[in-house]
Image 1 (spheres, rainbow, N blue to C red):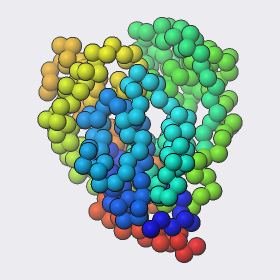
Image 2 (image 1 turned 90 degrees about the vertical axis):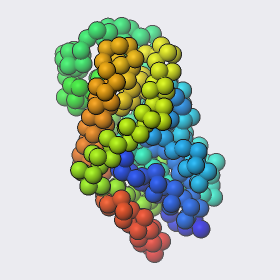
Image 3 (image 1 turned 180 degrees about the vertical axis):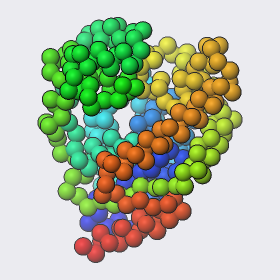
Length: 309
């Protein structure tokens, strides 16, 4: 039964840490609904390569916000929060259990979101034309010339956010960081929530990531990426940059071997998992960390503690 004093359960962790299984188990125990909090699992075109919950998982417990966005959409954190708000409205009797590894989604849910200005399509296209053929570090240097304050907050390798900053500057004439203080409150702000981060053993996690990528290949990941590539979408779209996608697309273009593409996909995913550990440790210090095998007990202990308040 749902305890009405508890607003939500948040389950985060690095990729391949067992979050989905824990979310399902909690949903079954608590009469909850599993809500996606992974920025790549929102895409309809990427079921296999993102290890999205399968049909058996979806039959075991209600799942929301999985595969509901077309790959041609540049899906944003703001749109995610709006979609999550609709889920809460539509599922008033179920405990929402947010599951995923995208730290910005969780931060937006709990801490709120900066009010970002809209960027007209013609401005976005003009910036993208200017960026075409420019390596990411060069793009970051360009941003540093025009908007040093924002450039100082972004990694020189983070092409997506560097380009976004250039778009906002071109559309408004103002640095992106100047909008950061204008915030709307978090969807779960002021509501009692359980915040749990799964912390697997690092060496075992690396092995699991490598094994899972190989398993994806046997499940049709290459065909899935081939179909995505045949759509001719902008390579800067988030879906086109999902871990494994760039390497497999390069293989399909004849630029690299399949083995090389697999090794790249595994390495990119391992690096991402390392960044997830670092990000949550620094950005979300009030979360409880637990090993995956103790995740259910840790979540139930936290729920019981909240219920007694």
